[in-house]
Image (cartoon, rainbow, N blue to C red):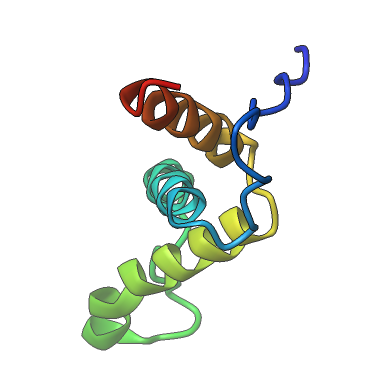
Length: 96
């Protein structure tokens, strides 16, 4: 797998790490990761802990937060690819 080429910013300065498009891309990666964690059993209730109905109801929140933490730490690289695509798309819409 080859690394992605750098984002072209010929007419504007480099975008900051907290750019709104970067946050959108990271949120999308977190959503994807959460969906991938569910079949793996993340957030599944454990019989030994005995959380009962309450644990079952809040398990999805745990999976969501785990996925957000993973995406925030770099995830699987999906957010960066999405971000670069969004920047390219926005750049082409502005006539750049």
